[in-house]
Image 1 (cartoon, rainbow, N blue to C red):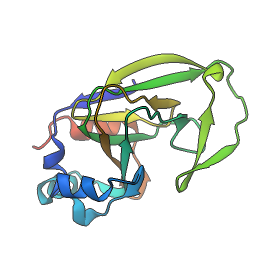
Image 2: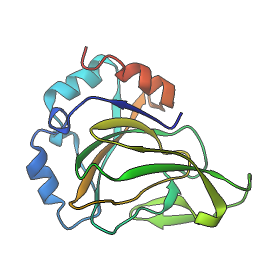
Image 3: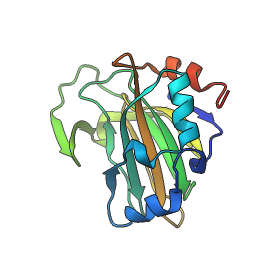
Image 4: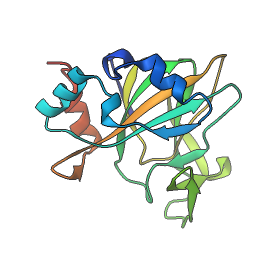
Length: 180
């Protein structure tokens, strides 16, 4: 499975969504800090013993596409929890490699090293449109394509528990009865 939708509005996650998003008006990616996060959401994370490892804010404008990539240095189980605001017509697409075990060099993209893939190297395997929130598998090749008009912002969390990154199914279980 590459994604699991759930219903949490971005205003339940960010203290002041509009002002935080407007600060990023010119940047395609920036880091947020826990001070930007709504107290109720932080309480939920505390009850689930979830630690925030990283919070990214991604901005996608008209005619922009994120390249096919993985958010890690290798293909693995590496989920993120994404909250979308603005244009909700942008598909997130996952791919599988046509040729397994192909060596890839890491590419510096924004401030991290990731693996990039050409369309000729992959086949599409799944696609969804995230309207509110979803747990997404970012340890497999994926991309987001801008469709329609308006900006799409994504607040993207990476969580840990006891200093260990969580697997996709574990995150799905932890968020299954939000806000409990």
